[in-house]
Length: 143
Image (cartoon, rainbow, N blue to C red; front, side, top):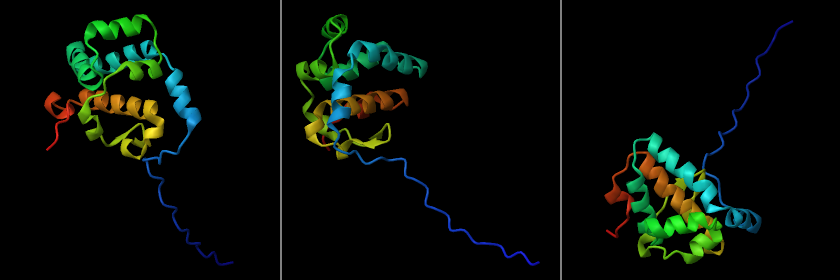
């Protein structure tokens, strides 16, 4: 008996960038999350990567307009992400925050899902800070 090798065609590897699909349920789930429950995780990640609490507050203030005192008040009140972003004065250059975070391309998230999109933008800023990017580059300015 002669064995004939069978050629297999390799399937393309799945891309790590997921196309954001309009999903009101996902947006609502994020909107209902308590900001205070996630905040310590953000801070812990940054401190593990050698960044300071002051740098973190600086980035949050740039993005949302919340100074440290206001931010602490929102944490103490256990506001949801929806309330957090409703009260925020998102920086006019926030539209310059682009790229992939958590497998989703920020610029593909529609404005209809603004809470979800703002959460991803905040996570992108935190990710850049954790990876050692300079503050001047994190705080976007138009070219």
